[in-house]
Image 1 (tube, rainbow, N blue to C red):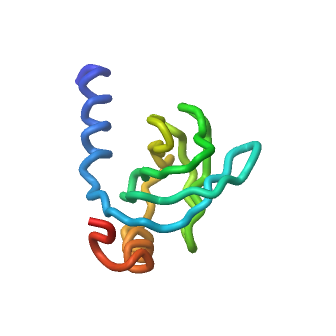
Image 2: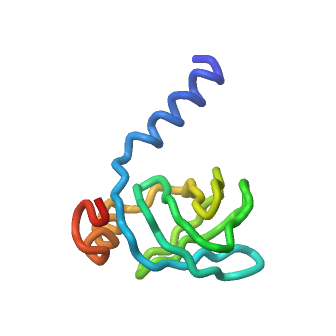
Image 3: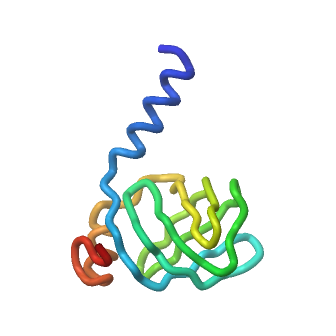
Length: 109
């Protein structure tokens, strides 16, 4: 398998995890600061957040929300919103716990 095909396969595999819409306060920790943010959606492989203080693409960060602490990097920024790709998949039970706290499956839909 070519390198390009393997990269595409890995990308598609990461996107297969279902995203759960949530609307819950969170914090984003970087090497320099801890910033208040809002968690907008969450999957086992990443999250979408919003904050008035946005990080830079490729910045290493930690998502802190309730009992969840997930390390990752910023993969996109658009206005006040940004996406995080986690370094490791988080447990499905952690996703379910955040969804439950946010008001049940499909919160904010």
